[in-house]
Image 1 (cartoon, one colour):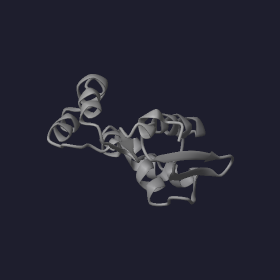
Image 2 (cartoon, one colour; image 1 turned 60 degrees about the vertical axis):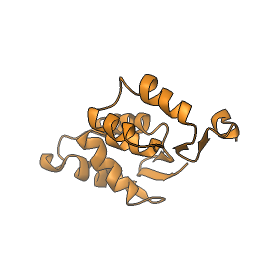
Image 3 (cartoon, helix red, strand yellow; image 1 turned 90 degrees about the vertical axis):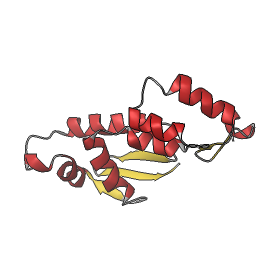
Image 4 (cartoon, helix red, strand yellow; image 1 turned 30 degrees about the vertical axis):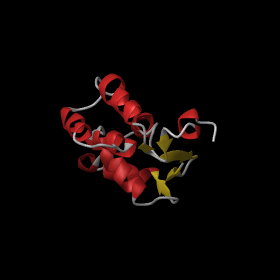
Length: 131
């Protein structure tokens, strides 16, 4: 792999193996960007999973969208299905493609260090898969 953290043995998959690196991330990198419940979970664990961190930081909308995508890995999920899941109270009226695209963009940013990727399938929807 091209990732030096992996080649140096500091990270394997989505687990941080180096306690020094984990402490640095806990104390310096993530401290400003995560909730207190996530900080507590990280502080009580010898190793923490990057996967766990990003999923704890999702908004309700992002979480709803992610659950649909995650339950349909390697399958295209239509834009309509995601809109129904993310905006159930709006009867799907008035929810624009742009609103969905912005929510998906925010979700992708939070997934940067996860083992998943979301691909846009033009005119059809979105596809989640392992990176």
